[in-house]
Length: 406
Image (cartoon, rainbow, N blue to C red; front, side, top):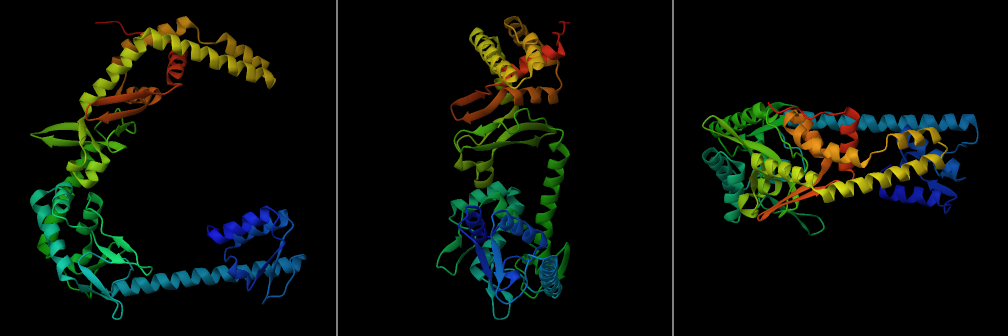
């Protein structure tokens, strides 16, 4: 159903520009009973029909429709059977150590006649360099920066139309693909099982084991702390230079954990590509919360919140009355947010904040803040237009009290 030409055809049918579709065989239109049923519904709805040149039947009768569904059932069975055969053939080839796939691999060229990988000595040297440098630097970001500084590019190959695919700068993602590809130790993987390959290995088993020991240690360390590390600005904080997200992460030094937000672009391409790079999580979170407190104490913000609250409530009351919901409209008027409610609620926020659990603090921040942009010279905070009103209504509904000072 996602074929562009079929989508165009269905659009023409719905526009009344098609009376009849002429097919060589029914399975040229679809081999799925469900999809074909959808097409038939569209045809019936718009008074169109179809004719098969090589098959003779009429869908005007119940017998004809039964014939149609039998043909489609066998077409779908044929398609699924062909898929299973191809899957079994690929599995058998991989078990025999053959290379299956059309995307070239760094370090090898493909011998299409013999259907096997042949070592490309120039690229093979780069593969060995990547494995060796990772064992020394223990960081994909540092390895990527080093490769890019030396002018190395990822694998590239020509297309049938004369274009070039690949040849990009190195990033963490590209390096992980290399470091986790068992073909470099002469193995072929299929569903989690490794089989001896027909091709020549580029790195030793000892070097492979050393690399994956480091990767395993790093994965365990991140997994152990990922859920324990709070991230107040998760999903809100952006790099103002690269215009991309900044993700929460951490590092450990001398038994202590340091949290920070890292520019996604810098993580992929190296720290040298971004002047922002990262920012201390504690520093940026404190700055944002302090800015929120300042904003909520501001008389101008309080006045604006009151005006917006009253305007929206008046519009909602008018809508309800127009739709005959008089009882709901009266209830909304009775529970309307007053100026005293807004002032009291926003004043409460400052005292309530420190008594909240981290999860509740994060939820309120998500409610009030639309985006935090971090730039080399400072930060920019964007508030949600309806966030203050929602906070006031929630605090009023919950009748929140400011905890007494000890």
